[in-house]
Image (tube, rainbow, N blue to C red; front, side, top):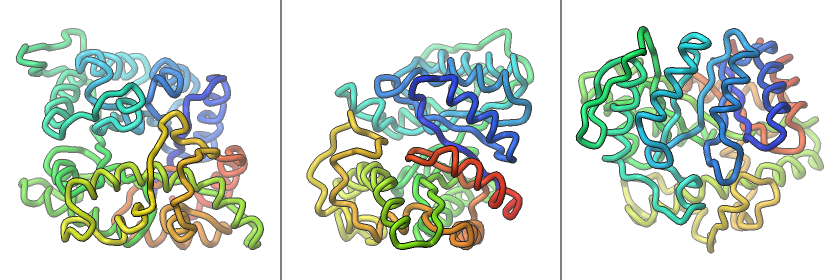
Length: 336
């Protein structure tokens, strides 16, 4: 199993660059950042610095979207980074939750996302693409490669991942739900005539290492409770589309959002997010990796058995450097 690192592009950018450099030295294979340019700094400027300072790390957004940048702009920036540093980028993409909603706009439809994935990948790999009805090609691209990994939760989105994407990004680390979603993606891939095993699976969630004490577990839960709120946004969308008791969405995924009253995106992805009181401890324990190193390794084994190829550590709490060091020292060697 590969281990990735997900960081927010908070200033100072130099700190993020240094942490990504350290992560590569400790065996992390992928680096990821959020892409919500109102809430955080522009990621791709910083990606260039990271790629310049590293040799093997594969870098990408978790996730970009089809709407905040024109498709040819997104394709060109990936192609430029690949031309400068070798093919070491991956395009994580989704409908656009925080990036769109914080600006008062709606996330993209799945149809628009599908068309964007095709166009961005074709352009970044040197092929002609249809961009809003216009045939375009980037003439200077040669031997480009851009894996397209899509974030998804709901049945229609999971179906699109299986039919089209190179990889699946799932932002929760519950083994039961992961297994259900991976099976859904791979069934869709098989129905589309693809090899299901060619669709890579990345699970991303906060990881907080403790000494096993009750006190540290309680502290870790508070540091990671924001994640349940973030996932709750996507779950609330699913409930609005399919209902609370739909056979298309597992009840385990929908029950906990009943007490959700609202969400202020200005606190998105923050430990001090005030809109996460509805998130129970059981959800934090299921969706995140909290506990001793042995507990982390046990859960990673279960995720690997569910079909996961990469676990990406959301390091967004008060022990970012500690989790990078501990994972590099004790987890990466055990799972690689």
